[in-house]
Length: 317
Image (tube, rainbow, N blue to C red; front, side, top):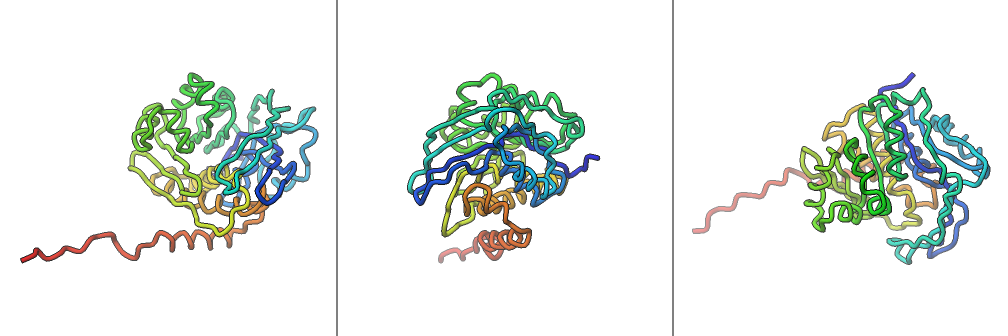
């Protein structure tokens, strides 16, 4: 039975090898679906995932997801090796260099949405080929809210297919560089206006540690990044943000402007936990009590004490 609070996430399950300033970590389990589903499961029950893995992907990791009430029926295991990515981060962890990408079984991935999942009301399409994202939409039964992630590679290599996808998208989640590339406009506010004309009624532009901007019919909204004393691994922070945001939306079965704005704080809080550990280790340990405490820290971070009305000064005599 499909709940009104159910969330379906379609994307990658992968291995990452990470060369960090403080050490190298080989074959860390990652992928957009891993991060997003763990984050979403902290906020709503009924998270389902669709993806593909090879013979080398650990079954105990999938079991750990099921232990979080994440439905893995849509995960295919096929002969071959799982998707693999190796990257090297800069000393400040703000930039990274791709050293190796091996699509492996992901190269022939054709998402198959189980019949039991097709009426799921909330859908998050991770960063995969836009045609595959469209193929998923063609299998769904009128989802209430469709969130889409994409990247600069698809923006440059598949503009026509991406344009078709955007016409069917409710919320597009991209970073500021991708927003400028997609629109051809340098000013972020003007770029957002252009992108929203292409289909998405809602647009979130991520700005890394500097937070995220939401553009919709209610106006522009800013959610800060949570200031941390130590960041260990930014990999998956954006996927964690998206999963947390959609998890909050699904939990409340509501996409009103107020709910989306609140959801951004939960997504940002969960992303701040994600970067505190390597891979999914830290986000996988977060308790609801820890999340609630960080949300309260966010409240204090942005609380200015009263309404922001300037005092009326007496007219000088």
